[in-house]
Image 1 (cartoon, rainbow, N blue to C red):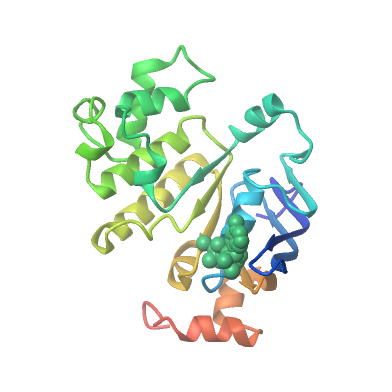
Image 2: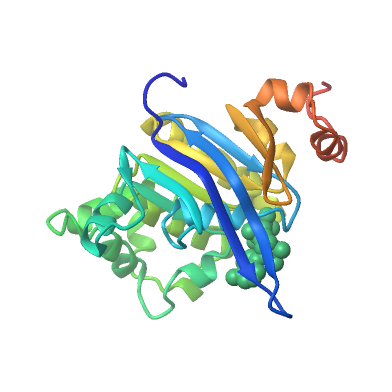
Length: 259
Ligand SMILES: Nc1ncnc2c1ncn2[C@@H]1O[C@H](COP(=O)(O)OP(=O)(O)O)[C@@H](O)[C@H]1O
Ligand SMILES: [Mg+2]
């Protein structure tokens, strides 16, 4: 699964923020992280460890102070806007708050058409397919709706559909279940897994929730205070954590299925 060139490669990425008093706060410190095609990598760590900052840098939404980001062999830094837009169609985000991610003035059709900007000819039929793929059936009942006419879970499904529209090779999902009602988290997680199985795309799943990493990651990277303290196969890292911090994270979550 980790054969060949990485799809996403972060090399020695660092990022600091200027905080009150003028001091620099090192949110991300020289992080190396790779995601290969078709692979599910979970980036785990406590709140404030720098996961979202790293995710934003990987997506090209924020420039690192040091280090490099390469997607599909192309460096993201210093790229023209047009090339960046092109490269970014292959790498799509799913955020925690689907309400904020969806423009309230646009219908589901408009939101999906916007995501399909590179393939304007595909139109309505493709929108309906996407809605079916994310379990919003019958699709024609959803296509005219505005975000406020949907439940939280339905909104998250629409934002997943939007991310899938351009058939990305990598999805970077930052706490995609945190904004969803507890009762539907399993459904959304299963949906993401089904889509991954069907399409073979890769995921970088950013989560403070070890149980999510345990449920479906191939590899896990553990982040503490801006640094990766442990990286490896999910089974090994979570089953036999080497670092004290990882041990604490694992111990805080009850094991599923009796092991
Ligand atoms: N734009 C910013 N300005 C200042 N500090 C920030 C900014 N973004 C994040 N931070 C700080 O960087 C640290 C890591 O944040 P974040 O990447 O959101 O962590 P996580 O996603 O793991 O909870 C936190 O202490 C946060 O307060
Ligand atoms: Mg975060």
